[in-house]
Length: 202
Length: 202
Image (cartoon, rainbow over all chains, first blue to last red; front, top):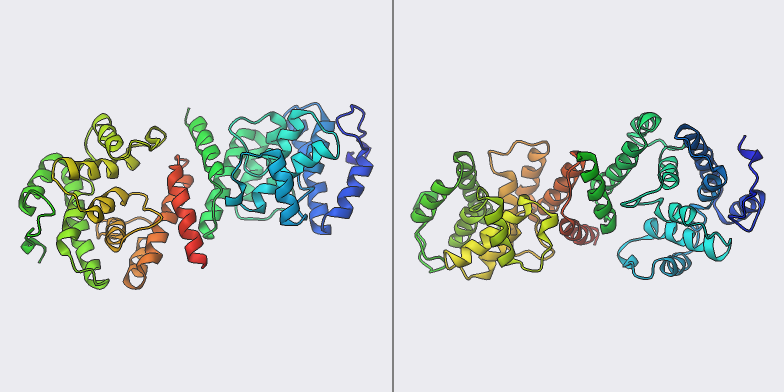
């Protein structure tokens, strides 16, 4: 049971209960529920793909959207503290919020485990090299039971057998969706997509 | 009639007939026919959008794929002469061949009119700022009567009334198609797409 997870390894300076209470205060109710579903889905995937450290899964999943309802200003400030050399102004909050949450994890919650921090930071556009934890979160965020976009069924099916395939699927479909709706595409996400497209070939 | 065009303005150091003969020798028959259809389509669009200098239209259209059947080596060499600071190695011949043809236009055919040269160079991925000539070629290459991809009917319809709309449509659909088929996307093409996406908003 998800509710029985206890944080015992000092990855974070609060209990799971306290973290959840903070989220409840700072997120819109709809997003708060999404976050809980992402945690549950990530834990399920962790079981499937034999990732043992469920504390890391829980912390990164609960933290991933922590800043998403912050003001653009606050989000941008945190994001540039995390990634001072990224040209974030060309992107929008859709890209900033993961970086902001990674910074918040370090600054407010004393999370210094790189695997957790990177998973949080990478959850929106992925990365060229991703840890198993990072992939679990990236995919859980995409296929949690509340999602119902075109293609989610295919993503869920892929997730049953091939985690890398669904990571790539999410990257691909996200760019496709942005282009279809005439939205700007964060250039770094295409650099990352290209890297994975090459991997898929080989 | 297309066949009656005479080059009288010294934009190029050969006659149209000689240019066509060169193309016939250097291109595969299928591509050679495509090039002639692009010229015809570009001239038609020029009439529609009131672009007067048909010599420029003819030269840029006939030149645009001049290098497309060259070896990768030769194409790359020409392309880097045209654009020495572009990280072309991350792209493939699909991006090089326009730059190579622009260089060939200057080096072999003494074409020094920037409008013509840029139109040739930009015909594959477009550019943030494009001249009317550049747009005419970009669109003609996309909708000439030999094309029959999904969406070509919509592109042709857009071309009847809104040239910018079909320029953007081509940029968008090209990225979408690459992503759908798991192919790499030339990053500069996304930078250009983003610029046009912003224009469409405004």
